[in-house]
Length: 234
View 1 (cartoon, helix red, strand yellow):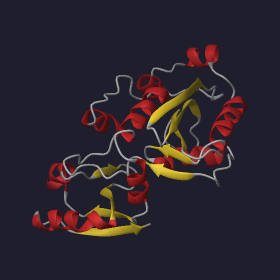
View 2 (tube, rainbow, N blue to C red; view 1 turned 60 degrees about the vertical axis):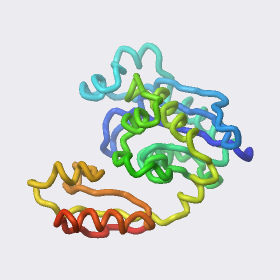
View 3 (cartoon, helix red, strand yellow; view 1 turned 90 degrees about the vertical axis):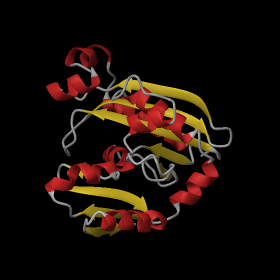
């Protein structure tokens, strides 16, 4: 483990369910002191299953490509483990997704602090949406190859580089809460405009925010006659 070193990570997968497999990964080693990228590594991974057409169209990664150019999952696991062993911080956007795959690979994360660029950066109040592509545009580092692991990771790290890392860690330490909107269908556009995201699995609009920002959200919801629930607190 080396002080001031973070590793940004992104996975592309065959889908979003628990049986989905990794088809590409990217790792970006980054110095938190200088806000500079040190080195990058990215590879295709053979999932050993048929890649669904939807995933092929989203990523551009076809069955023929992985069969010709991909490495094995075992080799990928070795690369990822080696990269992370020398870091203090792990950076991911919507980190729960990447962490679920790292845990499946049984990679030791015990020495790492996790920073989620979706939740742990104090973005300006006009940046209501937290999807990576829109954040990249906001920060004038547009991602021209979205849904590929290395471009996504570089976009994420270029966003992070625009913030003081000590401030990011301080903001991360503030508790997160999840706010569930109880608005009806007729207010879906309004809720979306307020920065809420749709959970297609649980079928509700939600927002993850820091505890110190929640009162502003509550006020906006009440002003627009939208009821809400606090679903979780971290």
